[in-house]
Length: 217
Ligand code: ADE
Image (cartoon, rainbow, N blue to C red; front, top):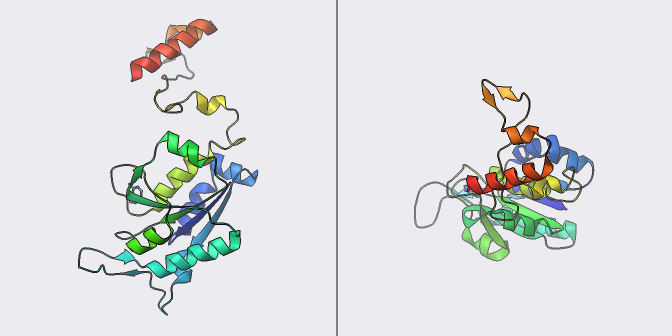
């Protein structure tokens, strides 16, 4: 699977995605990440990418043309049109079901907004999906784009050590919350691990895990 990030801050994305599990996934070839600096497509000599909103209002907006030119250039390079997602607090809130659906795709391009957002005409012309990471606002689309790319990449075959790793965990089936987990030592600051987990009795342990899932709801 290939991700393309259209952003004014490619290093934010690169730094995060080159580390740990996701970084290893890229090195092993399970996923590819490409970063595109929107400012490189600015048309004026000062490389400006923002301007004031028509009708007044606070802050600045990203202008349409550099984003359009950046996306068109990407489409020309890929020879196909990737699914184009705009990270926006106005979008539909991301959930595990959506992440699973996205993990089936070959190409995803993500537009990371800054300032107060982007000119609506660029959304209408190119964007397939507006996606939010929750009902709050962060300073730019890079963190939300990373949340999406991380959560999709870890579902790709080979990225986690085995399917067990995510089939068991919170939200996989869209409703269950996982059971609490414990590691060594068996007693920590006077708090003991639930007895049943130390018995090695697989059926009882499975039942306990299931009961605890219910309790967590
Ligand atoms: N940009 C700013 N806030 C956002 C959010 N909650 N989700 C997606 N993109 C955003």
